[in-house]
Length: 213
Image 1 (cartoon, rainbow, N blue to C red):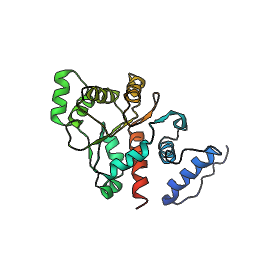
Image 2: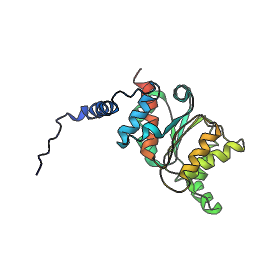
Image 3: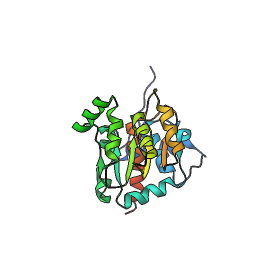
Image 4: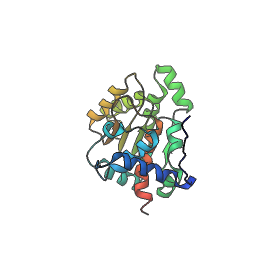
């Protein structure tokens, strides 16, 4: 049996070492400096280098997102998992609020009455917020479709859409709708994504602000 050698590293150094390994595996590949922290954090979260090709960014979206978070924008997620994965310390430093309406009684009731997913109805509720909204969608393609429909009706003007739901049914199509909409967006093309990816993207943007303060 082959002997297994474990790398000896202090718990506090694990994240740093993980990013060093990612850098080593990227080799000579040069990433856009504005996008690099997001791409690397998603790879760190998933251990999946496919995100080098999968992630789509609208022009100057990172600068736009940073400006929004500095100036009173809130975040809406489609899952409690994505919400819980966003760094609370960074949110607190910036005074950014995060909302999730998936388990609200009115959302549950309306979704049942109308034969819609709770995620779709939750986006309708988010459209009523007074703040500008960054949407972080990691699970429900119906949330992205709902966002697009609300935009077409003039009922919603998102600050940013992070569209990274994972799955098979209407996932690719919903992401393409966001890309075609022209809204500022970060999208994981194809079937891959997840609530952890949505949270990782938000955190990567937050850290570009808070770790410089």
